[in-house]
Image (cartoon, rainbow, N blue to C red; front, side, top):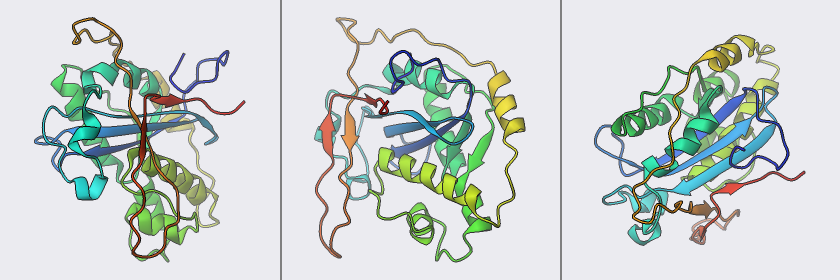
Length: 245
């Protein structure tokens, strides 16, 4: 069963995987992923499940002032190799979606390459490109500006789960705009479904071979008064969250 999938539900048959990563820096070659979130959508953009966790980057966490992740937050967090089997299962057969998706894809490519797993040439869908075409009133095309222009409300920026959920909402908004012709997802969805994906067994990096619990950073929603410091995201052991029945 996929992480975040309802008990008794049939395995998902394709769809979209909305991905966001927070990293220790801007270079996929020199920096590491410190948090990852995946939001699953079916072919009609309906939510199916999600996963998020902090990751141990095996070094400094980088710009805490941006992503608000401290070094203490990642103590005991899984390494990328330890969540890679779940990620491969979630991403397999799906179109990869992100805001400036090539950046998220590049970080995933490098993280998988470090453990010897080539990531397939999966079809990509970029909400930044969609926003440029269908949200001309946006003052900029970063995720925050696009979300504001779409009237989607406040969201907890620079948390992987907050960004992934906002990106999924932005995708739905853009495809419903009158300026956006009816999208034909059949080609990319079919292409994604036919791609062969690698599989990985459970990591054995811990001495006791026990499964490593995911550490979910649950963002605190606002909005907060201008200039106010929002509370820190709460940390919990549940890395995946099912959807209501």
